[in-house]
Length: 140
Image (cartoon, one colour):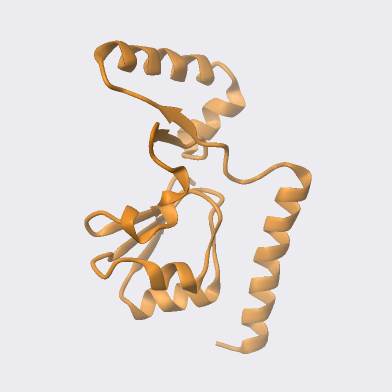
């Protein structure tokens, strides 16, 4: 791949991310913490999702996977840590995937799942390919 093309792609990705941050329109919504330890918690969560879905924009984000939910007591940013990789898949819910992120993935990971709004650099894509890691996007 041509070095100038790689540089241009990286510049485009960075410019897009900086623009999103400056305008306050970050591609990934803030994670919604969920604690489910009983049937009552599950019922409350279902009611909360229904309440959120009343807003058409939030509903669309939930349906597209852009409104993340995570279990309370866990770290949403753990999606980028090697310890978060379980089994053969690793999911990234926000941010930019770089070659450093790919290098830190556990050896057993063979599939990288990217949520909407997550960018991946060309170098990261090349490193994933070299490690036989397939890159898939969800919710688009």
